[in-house]
Figure 1 (tube, helix red, strand yellow):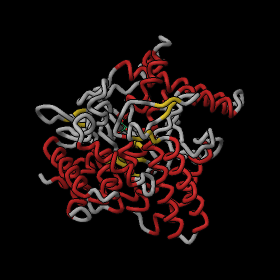
Figure 2: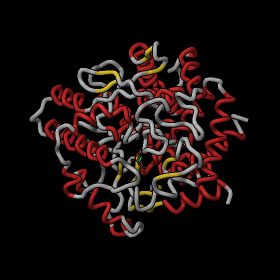
Figure 3: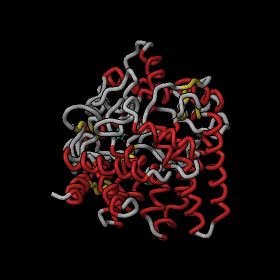
Length: 446
Ligand code: GLC
């Protein structure tokens, strides 16, 4: 079967007709809900398959559970839950059980209370048309206004994640400091005690427990802020101490997407609204380069906690920053790109390992701790092209397409070893981004 036919088979098989929209599950059974950044990737893949209507529906459906009022007005949840109606639940054998579990976990039958990488605006810009831009303009502005209002608690133009799930890299060793502190409390998370967890693929059980402890502590702080028993400043301080992760790739996503939103504003004849987003994107670029670059290490360094501490472990994240327009100056880009050819860092048999190979925690097969992810490669290919590293972009795109074509669409892949391998659920949606990379190899990278 051709790659395009295989990708189509997977996306069509994962499509869901919800009561209020159509979307694509990341994977049947394991991941039945609509996930924020997965759907952005799915929209691109539908577009690459020549299905713009499906791409537009996927993006419209993302806004079904946007928070409509209160402190978090505008926030887009990272999961909009599957299976709220019997007709919907009937589309997935595990749907009803998953819905019950996740509704209990999040305290809502509708959606989660955290967000995910905000890559909506660039996706809407690239796969949309004037009609979609108009339809989604106000919801998009509300989503980014929420980021600007709620996630820069120190007022330094550096945006924080409140939970590791918000980075989309669930087990990244960048969270190990926070994980260790949570596990040291010796508590058993309620979700594990009550069985309200999604028993997915290869995930280290202690790290899974740490993520659920992080969530219950966060939910307690959020609830206290909402009911007024905790003032906003105190709530922010507690959230920062719990996790407060300033992640380089999240700054990069905001830069890319605030600029994309400014472009959409201009198309719609509202340049003054766009100017505000462009100014904030510039301010993030300045803050990132002034505060997160470590010249001796030759890379950007994340922070977490309160007071903020540097995170030394080297991961894929600074490479994703290359994708953001105007963020990484040329001399810094050269130093980051050189790491792709360095066997101690990111040169591997099936790149890009999500953790540098010389790190103690590196494991080529482990979930977000060394294994290869197709969405990461997709950002880096585009970043390399942006910085004129066309040979490197072509090489990475080619190897990524070959890996997906030979192993199939899995959630994540072995980065290094004797034989290629895929892990997590089969028929996993966003690995279909290989099709967009194949398209790029024939067009802008040709
Ligand atoms: C895992 C990934 C996350 C993704 C979700 C659904 O939790 O770490 O990034 O959004 O699965 O595919």
